[in-house]
Every structure is written in structure tokens, then in C-alpha cells.
Image (spheres, one colour):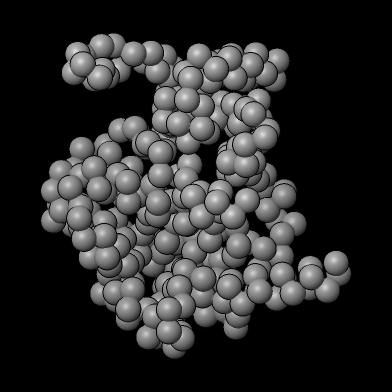
Length: 277
């Protein structure tokens, strides 16, 4: 078990995730088979076929969850050959790990990873309304984290290398010139605290909107170049700020900082859980 924990982390499956030009996520079957420790492609195909059957039985269109592609591969003798591969959705990946060898501990990690949001990408409005204020913060923080990850992938494809400056461009637009460090100091946070963990629901929603709109614009306009991408992030942040002002909303920098960070709340929840156990 110790060997597996050292070898695999929460980013194991995230690191082989790809994003297409429309911002959609996918995984390659060949790469997934290696992570799941299938040395023989034929054995992995058997698992893949079981996943396809499960997909059909669940009422999903297999063709929407799995797309066959041909890729060039170099053989040991340096000859180039076409090999069969598949682009996989998160859902079909989830079904694959459900049908993979349960004796492999990495498979259990994959089951946990791909289970996230496979039932539904978003909770319903009714479910959301029933959440407490802190639960809404946790939910929006999760979406923001996922959005930032996708945005970074798109920004990197556009040629961005300095991600800190790229993110600061968005903050400057939304926060009237404030960088992430300025927000950190204004909120009077402790060393290494995350500013997003110290935002209320509305502030997180404003940032999530900035993140998603920037991603869409980078893709739609096929933006290339670090400066160009930073300019887009700044302008989108600025427009989100103007939209808040136009409807008479509270500016992000004026929104109150919650008394407890999400990390603190998480620690408290873990302590309560341990006491119950």
C-alpha cells in the first residue's frame, strides 16, 4: 500500500486529462491503460468493451462518450505505424475503472476520481438552495478550482508561461487594479492562506464567471501569445466588474471576508467526524 501511495496521487488521472479547442475534457484510452497498469492492450480492450455495454445499459449513447481515433506510433525498429486509440469522456472512464481489475489499488483511486460529477455536472437549483452558506461556499470553491485548472490548460495552449501574471491580469480587471497579493493583504490573511478559501459565495461566483468567460473567449477568438491572453483576462475581469456595477451589486473588494476560511471549516468538520467515530 505504501508503494502505491508514493507512486500515485490525486493528480494521477488529472495529469493525463486533455482539453479540446471547445474546452471539453477527455482522456486517451492508451494513456489510461498505462496508468491502470494494463501492459497488454488486448486485456484493456476487454475492460473497455464491458464499459461500453454498461454505457448502453444505462441509456447513454456510446458514440457520444467514446470516439475512435488513429494515432501514429514509433515501433522498436523506428518504423511508424497507425495504432487504434479512443478519446474517452469522464463518464466512460468512470465505467472503465468500475470494470477494471479490483485487485489493483490504483483502480480504487480511479474509481474515486472519476466518480466526481459523473451523475450530474451540476446540482439542481432546489438542491443548491437547501445548502447552508458554508456548503454553498464549498460548492462554489470546487467549481472555481476546476475552472481555474481548465483555464490554465487553455492559457498554456495560447502560449502563457507565467501563470501568476496571467491570473493577476484577471484579478486586476475584476478588483479595480488589485493583484492576488493585494487581495491577500486586504483580507489580512495568514501566511500561505488561499484567497479563494476566504471568499463568500457571491465573491466566488463573480470569480467563477470571470474564469469561465475568459476561457471561452480565449478559445473562441483563438488567442495566441502571452500578452494577448493576459489582455483578454484583464478585459473580461473588467467587464464582469462593470456588469456588477450596472445592476447595483456589491464590488468584489467590498464583499465581507468570512470569519472562517474553508480550510478551517474543513478541519473542524474532520474533527467532528473523528469524534463521532
